[in-house]
Length: 141
Image 1: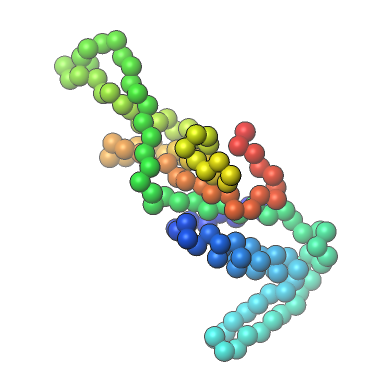
Image 2: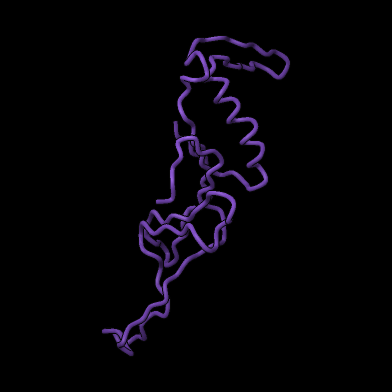
């Protein structure tokens, strides 16, 4: 099972890991928690996957778009002027599908930038992916 979630701050990662992942695992066990109000708590037991050996593998990825990181490629062109007479750009946006998973990302965590869209209004902003749990064992390659 692969779950992605957006609009999470870095300070909320531990809370997501502790609360949501344990809630998903409880749902795999068949113990579903319904809270109709903050005082009434009902547990309903359903046989979802039964024993823990038959649970699906879980990978949990946080997607962040609200960051100030931008990537550019140094533009090298032998022409001194473009066709319309303007000087060529010094830097261009990174191409669609580009992945940055080394050098500037955290060395101990699995995280990466992925540019999945074209640049609108001149500058593209790639999404920043944090892998909190990787039971599927996805690799960067």
